[in-house]
Length: 363
Image (cartoon, rainbow, N blue to C red):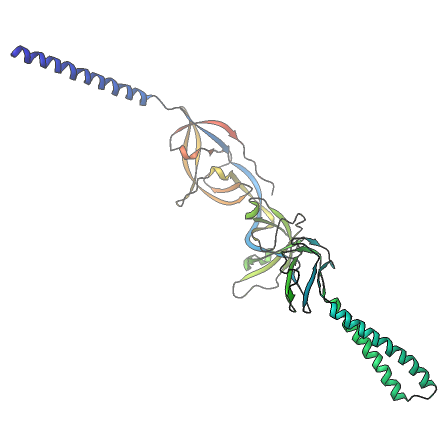
């Protein structure tokens, strides 16, 4: 009985000893694995550069057509013909819509016949008055009748002319609002017409900048429709005074818009370029980590162990062409991480796989 108990103890000891040794080897393997230094994290780097940026006044505004109106009819009538397509480019005077003028033409024909008769009567009356066989009063009455009928013909011709709608100026038509056979009351909107080139920008600037406004100044605008692309124009008009309610000064700029990409009604961001310029430190916007608690970058420094990163708070200013001005926290030539910040933390070793150089857009 005792020998059996001893054998069982030996077997149990052998099993538990084997399990303990296996666990020990597993722990040793894991320790060895984690004790191996991690390879440096690959990142792209960029050096802080220096650039000359013209001072600008930032604001917002909206685009306005130089000429913008609805083509309307002055006299009522039924649409008998349409001579344009929606969105068409038309020249000043181009025929757009014809209203039915059948009755007006018939009336005109009758008035012209009466005028011809009155003209003949006038010719006879002139001979009779010379022969003293017609009184001057009767002659004046014949003359007045001819004059009245001539005026009636002219008025009827004007009415018929108003039943032909033409473009008042050169521009681009909108979407037509009438169809063949529609009855148009006087003043009905037929189609919009806008001049797209050039185009105006209307905006308001705080009164503190009024001394810096000057006709001919360059204005840059950016629209959400075209991303970071800038359009250049010139300041053409400045309101003489500021609005007493808002203390803002209204301005107007003109853009050539030869490609007609800018459209009336667009909301845009604008920068009014001043003559003076500032020397600024710049970085690509991708190098900045934005946070509600402050902006920062990962500064790359050389140590005996290699390249190491450290998060550093920075203060930023304006942006231009994908670059941002750094107003505090860095110096010219400092290298920071441009791509790959999301996998970094303080003290990590990095390897620069692509050394980017800063390129600033010309002012």
